[in-house]
Amino acid sequence: MKKLRVGVLGLIHDHVWANLEIFKTIKNAEITSVADVNKPLLEQARKMGIKNAYKTYDDLLSKEDLNAVLVYTENGCAADVITKAAERGLHVMTEKPMAATLEQAQRMYKVAEKNGIRLMVNYPTTWRPEIKYASKLAEEGAIGHIYQIWRRTGHKGPKEVGCSQYFYNWLFDAKLNGAGAYIDFCCYGVNICRSILGVAKKVTALGGTYVRDYLKVDDNAVLLLGYKKAMGILEGTWSQIGGGGPIQYQFVIRGSEGTIAVNQDVQVFKEEKNSWESLDPPPLKEGNQNGPQHFVKCILENDPFEDTVSAKFNVEVQAMLEAGLISMRENRTVLLKELF
Image (cartoon, rainbow, N blue to C red; front, side):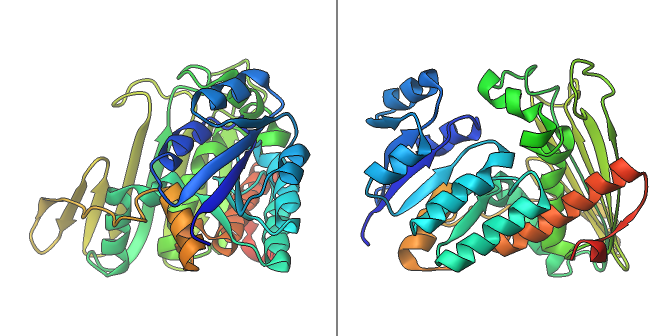
């Protein structure tokens, strides 16, 4: 296979458009077709130079000669769509989080394994040099034993920051999204904690609709991951006003010998020096600078996906998210062994 022929199933996840722009720069991949029920979104794709547009996923899958597909549907619909693709032997890249529920994520993983296809869950945080570098420093012991990871992700709300109505209509539906700000934003921190600390032993979560009263899902949430000798504190918000622009990410790793703080750069405080040092993260290598590059490279060269975007890894991420949903619903701490 010299060139990956890729179709797109679903255009109602707003992250799709940036990824389609990236695919236009990849010489050994071609987006041949798109499918979505919404005519304006098909027209938007045509303006990007994608000629073949279908109203149904089945039409695209039956008429196009493909090697892979991108799945940009609602979280809660991804499992059914990915099953269709996998049964046709097509590799899949989908967007974070893996699904709306643990059952869906497990089904996606099993259908990929059964049909021998590659399934990648694209987490944009994987392609941020500062996050990758900070995680590497922590894993290498730069600040000793890691006992706490704190991450806050948020903005003032999907509608308020200008997401399309096609996107926020399903983000505001608990069945289609999985929850609200909790599933949308806490998932990033869970993915990072899974990478550095592993699977938590217990989970406690709190969330609710505190500001955006028109919502039927949470607009703010906090997820606590409990490990034997560490914790993860993860926040997600759809009501943050101010703080460096429409979206602000904050990420702090605390260790027995220092602290790593991340925003656009990496700051390291070591006890022995008693001072902060600013470090420039190394650039990501060609082929691993973003999700589309990585997906194409790994499929064509038969390389494994990075852990943080691999299917099995993200089933475990989904399990921790599911435990948090149970915790909020039942007002208790949930042990991960209850779900595995």
